[in-house]
Length: 225
Image (tube, rainbow, N blue to C red; front, side, top):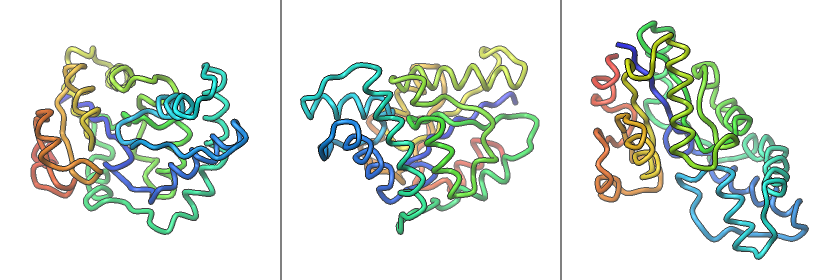
């Protein structure tokens, strides 16, 4: 089949119960020296884009070094916030689906996430899911989700020993940004309503498939398991 599957994390596989937002606010406070409360949704954004926008909204100087500093401060705080989050949740169907995909030689499973690589490891670590993901495209590498999805696809194709043109790609996510990034890279989008976006709004972006959870029969038929 030569299938590459890229999963988003927040809103798709898990909910951290606000741990990520609290850690970002702590990182901003450490770098800026005062509390900053971003007044926008993080859904679909990359870590670097979140930090850039938060600094701009707060009237702070913005450059790559300052964004790097906030990112590092955030990653220092994130393990504690994730570990202590009372509402941390692995969504229905996620663990059984990943177990069925594990070890198959006709596909590779990776991440297409706005999280920094280390942030992804921390979040998935509490869920016990890190072992299922061999590669990915991450928000510490690219500020634009379309670019990180493209890089994830290239890495998946290399693992399979195939050119990208010979691979089928499915991007699984919960936001319009995931769907648009899939379309931009010639991939199929499987959208799930476990995040903050309503079904009707996701439908407007025309994913190939739209489900209410990864436990849906449609998911198993798409991936062949």
